[in-house]
Amino acid sequence: MDHQPELTFKVATEPWEFEQVHRLNYTTFVEEIPQHSPNPNRVLVDKLLAQSTCFICLDGSRLVGMVTVCGQRPFSLDAKLPDLDSYLPPSSRPCEVRLLAIQKEYRGAQILGGLLVCLIRHCRDAGYTVGLISAAASQQRLYRHLGFVPFGPLLGTVRVPFQGMYITWETLAKSAQGLGTRSQGFPLPSPP
Image (cartoon, rainbow, N blue to C red; front, side):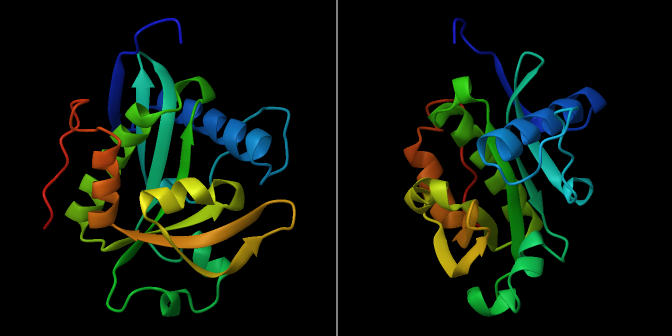
């Protein structure tokens, strides 16, 4: 990056923000992690986006990072893993965290930490106790470092395998703290 970013973290609400969400979704999950087929428009609209909350990071008016959370079942993992709840901690209230993506030139602790703080606040306020993800096998090291726990068999395809994983907000808050979010102006919420 040639400039000092002016970062804003918020919930996506504007049409121009969602246009950029669809493009970053395409770049990440078609070109980088070839989970979906290419298309000439270079746009990928996620099928669960309409029932999700999408947190974004903007540098000015440019989308540089995003993550979504969906609390409405069925999750994408429900379709991939029969009896999903049997893999989760007892009495958990899950949500599904999806579409974590950061523009390559912006990857680092600052943007990841800011998105995680938004996610933790929202999920705690909504009463979810665990977050579920389908982690690309190539990214499992990152997710394990953050504290995610793998469960069930590998999913996806031979070309693009995924691992179901979950995390509690307390564990994720500790990991986000380790990313230096307090010093970057993103105070973490207190545990419930």
